[in-house]
Image 1 (cartoon, rainbow, N blue to C red):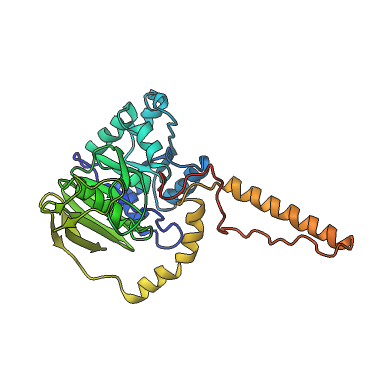
Image 2 (image 1 turned 90 degrees about the vertical axis):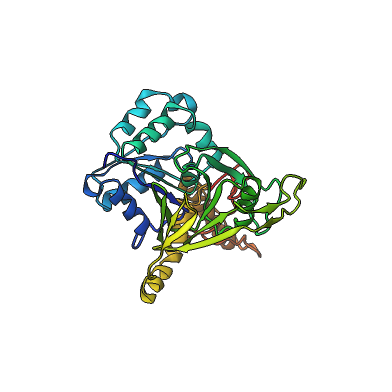
Length: 352
């Protein structure tokens, strides 16, 4: 807490929780290190208390002094002083991934949202992953579809917290091919920078300076000199976007958001370090299905396992009874990819 605004951490989702945990470690350090008092806000998440347990354990292991979870579920909660009180003493506020539109609908324009802004102003580090990254901007992407070509009506905006001014933040950027939707928004609002953040990567904003931390890159679209047909393109037509300045910034790069210019860049990590990080990706993906990707809770996995066990037992009884073609099944392994129920949100339709 330095008396001025704290650092902002916009994390592209699926941050490493198993190995080096570079992005999360940087957040803890910015929040005060061994003196950090972190509040986790899991409002966007579909995982209930599980997501708080995971991040509490991670932040505690990374040296934070205290970690608590505060989950307003509606705007009434977000105006309740009991939900706001923990934010007044926090040195770090971390918003999880999940449903972006729910997070915006609950937090923005409420006492809770104003408390987050006030905490940042007095020096607290404020960050979020996936949906929690998008809400840091004044205009956040509520939902949209993927694709490389910018098209009309490709996405929809909602109100954000406005901590990152003059920009739109998108996440899971390269992994979910969100170039088109971010570029379409820049074509429609050329005064805003488009900031796309890869998974396990953070855009760390201090004042007007952005620094890239993590394994991937931050992509910036500067449309200040764009030529576009966005004002008359109809339906889902492709949008003309000529003259956009592109910046792809790997780790160690720094960028001036006000001047819209590269400031510096350093050497990349050694090849063996990159190989070690990539070797952990399979484990990270498995965990991300349950924690970062959202939409399928551990309880749902457990239920699928119970169903698989019952089918296996039924098949065994049929075989013992001499039936010619017993029902076959395969046990469900932990972290296995499942088809989600129709009621669960899909990655490009409002969840992050």
